[in-house]
Length: 149
Image (cartoon, rainbow, N blue to C red; front, side):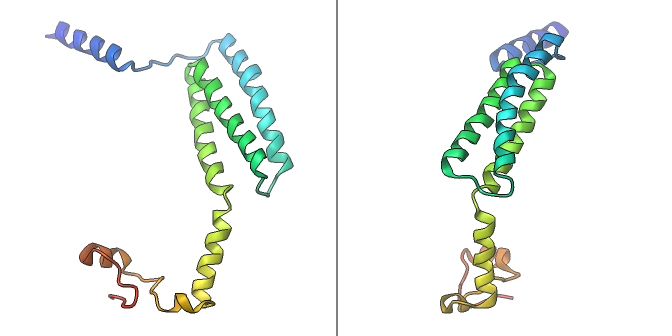
């Protein structure tokens, strides 16, 4: 029975190519520091230059490329610490992508206009309904002129 289990585990591991990461050697750490670290410094220089600002489109593209290069760099090294750094930069990239679109400012303006009733077209709708999930669940749609409470 145990031979069958080991055989199944071996086949499963090779079919689905489950990576078994190892601790980084000193050479791998040095490669990460030299190669990936150099790309990180380039990215950091953009963050210093555009601190608190939304960068121009060409700079955003460069920063996106740098993020992808850093992620690929750590992925190619393949050891445990490098894969952890890769995951860290993937999350950082996702957060940066969301917050650098300017959507926060746009949404603040949108909800501010609704809350203050600046536009006539927003007054007829129940934008701040407390039962919006219940309305959708039970009726299949939101009736914009009548609030179900």
